[in-house]
Image 1 (cartoon, one colour):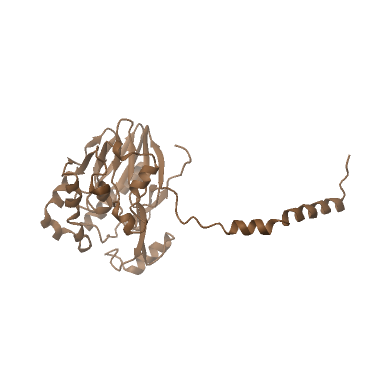
Image 2 (image 1 turned 90 degrees about the vertical axis):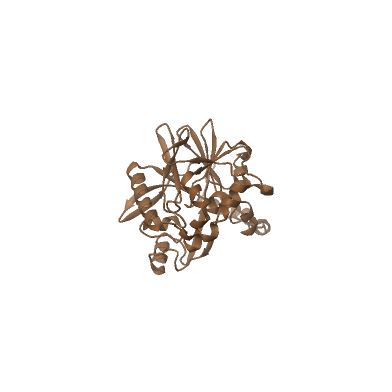
Length: 332
């Protein structure tokens, strides 16, 4: 049997090192010259709620300077402190946009639709990604049976308009909150909007005009399709509505803009009032009520403005709430 001496062992190791080291400068130099990809992968994620399949489809995210009035009842230094506590950059407002599609087995249902195709070029690809990511997820917009709208801000309805200014979901029934429709149909209500939201007033007329105003108006508390129930959550807008998706013993609250903008701020400080909320005091009460419910029931939230894939649990923390990201899974 061969005997390895200490000298032979070190000599062998040195020789192996020399072999590995010999050609490496050329190989490593070639690899270092590879160009950076410069873009992300397609943004979608799937999970199950009972027998239902939920696809989270990002519309992207953008960052703007943090205004002094972003939170109308808290000084900017306090807002910056809260951002830093969540490991977010101070003096910046970063917003994510996250619609979902629910396959119930009998119906393919889109809930909200993103900022629209026009925003993709305008933002240099930062937002307006919804329809491209929908396609990447293998979802044909022509196969969508129902589109449910939570409220009429542009980041939720503009994706209803497709290429060539035609309906993006030509075969779908479009369902809208009855209260929301009535509010935005009356142009005199512009005086009830916060100043920052007043330019939004003509937009629903434009979007729904493309659809020929063919919509089904729904009421909160009603099951819109089997397994998807509308839940009143007013304040952000008068008819703002969230949705509970339930199958078997599983359910998730698709919460739309209960916490809008930078959602973590208004979860940590639910009493803070977002500059874009129409009835700010009512938005606070809605937030407290529904987050108390979600915390008590340990119900998962799917948040439109949470960081992708926007799935969290909520627990009480002091006078506010803590958002706990739901575990990511590599399989469905």
